[in-house]
Image 1 (spheres, rainbow, N blue to C red):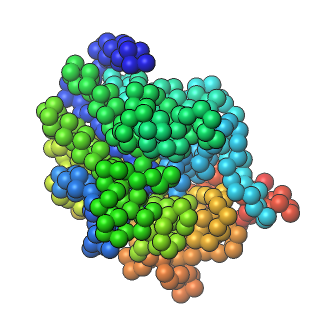
Image 2: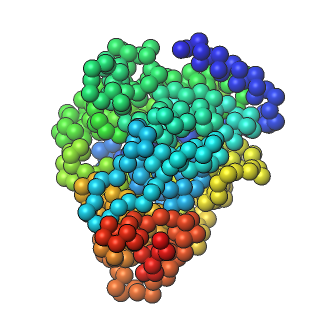
Image 3: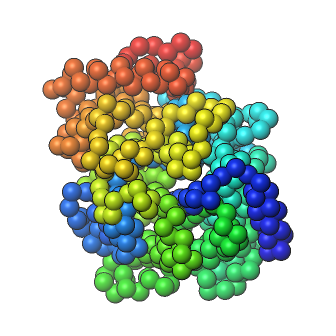
Length: 513
């Protein structure tokens, strides 16, 4: 397997040698964390240090923040696959219609059953980039464009772009030259090398076994560490031959199962942290060590000055109990709710960007940005212009904010659309909701309740006080804007079981079936 991978790399480097790219083209690393909340770090993204910031130890995130730009109003979608497809395509989830997480099994609906609604026919088979596949969005993926421009493209870790039996189950079909440990699964069966990361015949959940790490089986090497070692190996040859690379290091941490990283667990237990939360904190610190190891490698190879690092999570932190410890919905406080929700706890992300020669060390941007925006931004960073894509790109480059973090465009509207049901819990906008943020204003449309909620996030970051009744003009304005944008995306709405009719738009108008 190792020799075969090396052969793929060698062939790719030979082919890339004929591509038209500048020797000064920057290397680009996207460091994606799974289920990491906005304050699951010692880096404060709020106005001040929170109690949760004090719990976690992330010195390498601090190091990256000190070297680059911290974004305090960065967003993803509320669950994983929609975010990951938006990253690959630059599309709003309302447009690409992969609005819920995809099952490892093809054609399998992941929506929790509901008495009132049937979910729309969303793209439950994820993304495709070739011939049309049922229930997929056909798009031109970001790594393919980078590869075509001469970049060596490497995927390491979680993929989760489509079920087994579809091309997207293998990231190599989406433009990655190398794929290490990425498949259809959304979480690992095990983080432990001693348990072969779940690859044990006879275990009931073999479906979630992490592929491609056989050399670590039976070892004491934690999954996060194994992926880091493999990521560093993956870019060794591009560095040696001076070819620009795009590394997408997408950790399975900190997704469930919440299993303690033995390297860091004891310190949290000794502090009296809840046993489950201590394991979670150790997953965070292990992820942070990975970031530090990658940064150290760049410095050792003397390429740090020509390498962009972008750090992001795929949705808000998990806040349900179980599987989290402690009190439900408190893990992202002062933000409301968590993963699966359109309240801030479910969509607001920790985001850091270092671009040597462009970003100012220790700078902070308050610009509202969304995961869609990474697509055009990365292409512009790589110097790739006038690209032709199958899809309409909804993202907007945030390079102006990297160059001048004081810039803040409040006219830009960001939309979320979740016409699905995530869990048995119907509270906290975990199901059938849409939302829009423009400037400091945010409107949430709760479809079941036929209700609009309005918040001013500058005054009420925790979304504690719905002010729609005292600001009906603003609520109506944002409802109309949200409806207009959803219609332009050709977004789908849930269907009433009783009538077969779709839910009305946020402004109250009726959808044509």
